[in-house]
Picture 1 (cartoon, rainbow over the protein chains, first blue to last red):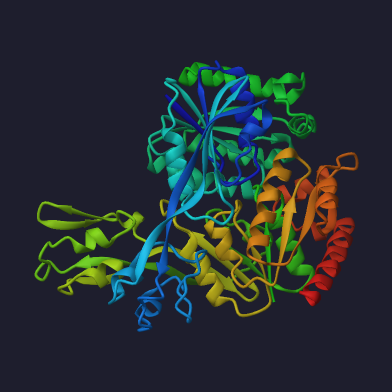
Picture 2: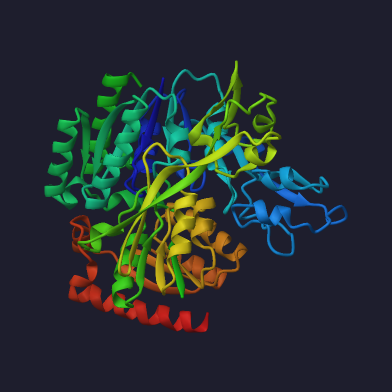
Length: 280
Length: 271
């Protein structure tokens, strides 16, 4: 069984909730951090990386200037402005599509695999975390997400920390999962983004739940969100109050459940509801 | 003049900084967070014009196609497959690069535009929106880059991957917005690495700063980075933001953003 935590909007509390759930769940559940360009879950725990693998997730065109006859065909066919006038390739713009390679009449262009990051299996007191780091600026976050999700420890259950947005990284994080928890906040932005990400989980036919974090920041909007969830038949399984202890706890490297505060009580109740609903 | 606001971590205040600064500095606002654009919530506009963003996808002329499969081999994104008597396209995997039509020896491929998103605009306001179920926001951001000719603030998507690189194309200056948590600091370091590798001059804004929390201040001092401004934490600001209001409607915050605006202008003049 796989459960993913997503949000649409960034910074609503995905990782904070995932870390607390990780501490509450059985340590045999594999934690998977799919936010590969801002991987933070492992920062919450004492850790030891027991496996590290280089990831080659992109290709970049290379022009052999010995063979090149300066016909400019590569420059003309590139739709990403990656081939510059001097017939060199800007690797940050190159999508690795190979159109230039097809167009080159003298086979002076090859595509080379590019090292774009690492994947890790990390041991922590709450169990294993599969995670990855995409090099800043690299292409192919969706591919790296798929690679992290393939890391297998033999665990029957997986708890997945997703990334913000609705694009390739999120689609790769939620493909094939059984359940999604959407963490939102009562702001106009949080609500807009919840609607967009729910459209995506609905398209993938993933049973979704909603948690409203910092619900007391704006009670009116919390009500608007609850009404939306009621109409769309999405169970709201938690309302977590704003609590300044949360960021304090993160900075101490502790999960919120180690403190006796209103937010930690609300998180424990989310966990209990999930256990009942999905059996984690 | 192109000013880009990015952060690494999501939810640190990119949109808050971009929208309020665009008002204070009287610059255009460009929403490049095309997966979840929120700037429009704060910047009201009544009459919006719209432009579709599309990718070119291959279409096959079955009377010409010899099923040689060279298009399938040429596609680096596995968007094409040979099934029985035809070539099948998986549209969401297609990057619209045109390699297949270049590879086709019998000219059987025509390229047809497929809409993946849109841009809404009105004076000094531009917003890219990626359609749900579309994986790639990059083309929408590239279109925004082409469209905007005036002095503008570009609100980047979270993270540090390719779509942020696209937003940073030809940037004169970058503002990195962070928050004083371990997560904020970790992701700030990635964002710093990114702008340094692209040689874009930058400064840092600490949002929701707390007096007794020195994480960001210490890091900037150690690394000799330009911590331009610290916007203090305020619960009333949080609820103003929640309701979709600009913080500069509040007198205290107006002063904060005016001061920040002046400090940013000084950097822009030097950039």
